[in-house]
Length: 265
Image (cartoon, rainbow, N blue to C red; front, side, top):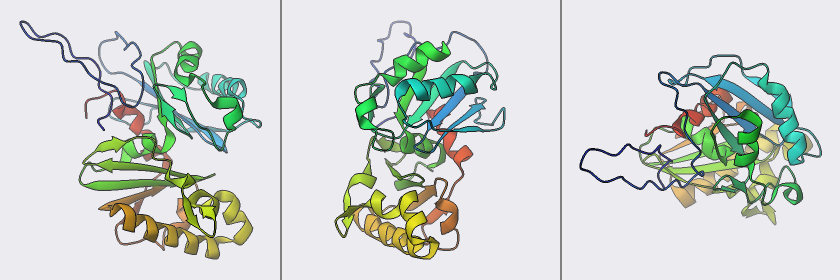
């Protein structure tokens, strides 16, 4: 599924091409000419991250991180983001990654934040009101994947953090809202339950690493990815235990995916 593209101007004598935005409802684009600054926000079950990027994806500031409030109600999360904005430069547009299924900017699921709070919440509109800028919102693993995929063949992006995020790309085209982590895996547990941060703390690194390898082996049989991109706060523990076709990426690398939500490539 193609990433959203900004509308193209009408060519003389030609026809306007209708673009279908699969990942997020199109917000009004900035009229500013010249380089645009993108504010990227990653909402997680444990922390909220924010960074400002130039058009080439180069960080303009240090990444800022605050703890996700609990209970993580929309108003509390938005208040935390509001408090972070003062530390960032002026920006022209905003990209948001959210830990759940997001369709047309509206949250459908939020397993690690509280589905009773978030289901049906129009996060895109809330963020537009908060920032005063055009906003696009997609699943957090999808956002991270947009920043790291090589756009060749089948690529799988997995994030090991509070839970397990997953994104699937075919020749650079995203299959949105995969949410693989909530699928049954082993011993009556889902992938996320087996390799979550809570599981890591309960069973220790050695056994947790073994579980992650088992999960990677099973997932590979299903999707046969050319490469697996592994990120998230707990991916560091897999450094010396990766399959041959896997690579690690940093959170900052992943957040550059916020640029792709506004470009053609």
